[in-house]
Length: 79
Image (cartoon, rainbow, N blue to C red; front, side, top):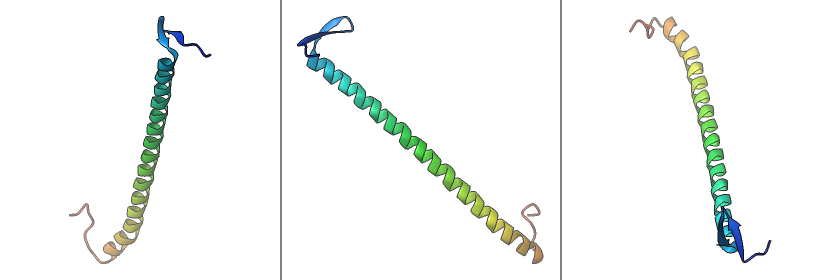
């Protein structure tokens, strides 16, 4: 549509103004979409990092605990 004036929400506006408003809405929606995707990616990264740290700690405990017990050192509960 190539009209100099168009009706928008019951009022008349210049078509360029309406196009600018719509363009801004689209940009805002795209930025929000990118923000949400970035947030999801960041949360997934943090979950992954936490799981790796937990697994690493478990492996250390699996090796350390029997060695400490064999050496006669007290367990964490006994301290």
